[in-house]
Structure formats: C-alpha cells, structure tokens
Length: 161
Image (tube, rainbow, N blue to C red; front, side):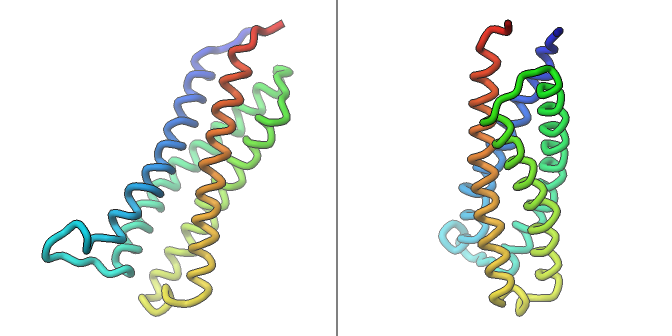
C-alpha cells in the first residue's frame, strides 16, 4: 500500500510537540508560577491566584490535547487498517488517548469549576485529590507519548514487506 510520508511526519511532530508541551508546562511553567516569591521582588502571587493562571493555561492547552487525541485516533486506525499492528504502539496510543481525554475533559474542567467556587474550595481534600490525580495523569501522558513516539519511529525504520 502507498504510504503518505506527510501523515507520518505530521504524526511525529504532533507527538513530539505535545510531549514537549507537557514537559514544559509541568517542569518549567508550573514551578515558576507557583514560586513567584523566589523570582519577583515586590510581587507575590498567592497559590489561589497562581492556580487560576495555571488553570487558564491548562484550559487553553486542552484544545491542543483534543486535537492530538483525534489525530492519534485516526492515525492509529489508519495504520491498523494498513496491517501495521503492534502491541506496544497500540497500548501506548490507547493510554495517550485516554489520559489526554481524562486530563482535558475531566480534570481541567473539574479543577476550574472548583476554583470558580473560591479559594476555600481549593483548600479542600477533594480538590487536593483531584489535583494530585491530574498530576499523575499528566505524567502518564508524558510517558505514553514518549513510548508511542519511539515505537512508531522504530516501526517506520523497518522496511515494509
């Protein structure tokens, strides 16, 4: 069957860009926003307001995650139909899809709705548990994206029969 290298190339760019964004948001942006006291001189943003800023960043990032999930779903369906079945790619794609949807459709809206209730709501055990679960999900998404990227790259390098 005819392979479209542009779809493969776009797939790798989307996976890499999403992985880069997940790492950037989790390891660079969040620590800076939540620790303004170490960076700024007469400006301190409390955790509630820092959370509002971070929540808006994640809300906007969710649109990209939805796009990435749709692309992964269609790409993986296409290569499956082509006969390029691989258990590792399939498993990591499923994890990417579900963790991406879990983050964008469940955790982000839930956290934003609790933030809208005020600072007191963000101090609850429920909020803390949702926040911790979203962090774990974000890490799972990063690992699954990396595994999917590497595995698909390995498969692409193997000559077709």
